[in-house]
Image (cartoon, rainbow, N blue to C red; front, top):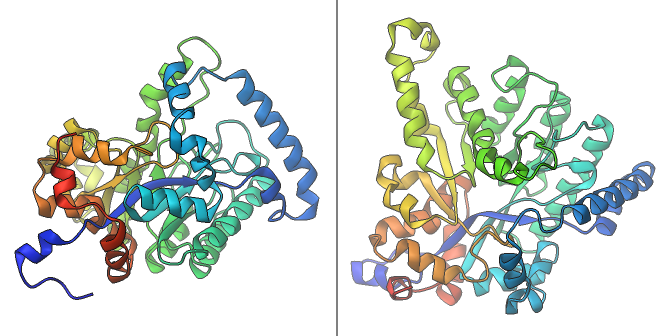
Length: 396
């Protein structure tokens, strides 16, 4: 699609919005179809145990009034959350929010595969079966509407060779959104260890961004403050891999590797880089960077991006400290804490005073570059469903 030749024509274009953070997951009975026969009974038992645990924890995560308000919203009552697994409903809900493209992270998958891997001990064989079931289901979901959904594949830390094979399978079968690495590696070495080198190499070769996503922390039990502890610390565990990949030279050895850190805020980036720069410049720690040709901030600027889910106004106000070219907005559909189904209100609160070029970059342009979306295709869809600049500028 040709670019407008005049600034006024560009401003007249509706906004191309790509959510860098959405979630999808099948129902347990659907996952059975993607599991080998020998795992189905044990998967059924796992789901039953999981549902009993969730029933015991009902009302302990979100404020009850907030949960009830969300559950009674028109979009939820009309079945909008079924877009978690139904591609037709999913497209309807995203387009109602003005979103033409998305990056998809997991909900729960069989045997605990997903964001919470290694929260409890896992059976490696079962977990791998759950990962493969999720990836194959997600590929079918994404391929039902090609070009609009950048699915992110799951792997675990158990067997690096298996992980490499799964990454290759994912790329060949339409999961071009990248690879989610677990926030914890369980009993295995962490990501600074050389054992993971084949994973970084295949992700660089296939242009598969490596993702971290908020969702994991140690299990704090059932004490009254457990949820507050989880919420307060969960983001730190999500961006811990950045430290490992930086100092272990992964970015140095793989200069085309992309790291995307999602739903972890963005204000921490500036302080973390400032601390790393101090370590870099300290004569006591000069051996930290003996094999590095760039400074910490330079690696971040070259290879790292932030999935700035439901970007808050105060975080947006600090965008230049990090760089607007690094930030990618996300709605977190269909989660309660995200912007759906009131995305336009959220966009107005955060972006009403942001210059147009920065707005277009953070809402879609940056994600299009990082993940390789077909911009011409998405622009055509945006002209039908995307909001206008004036609608974003309107008072929230």
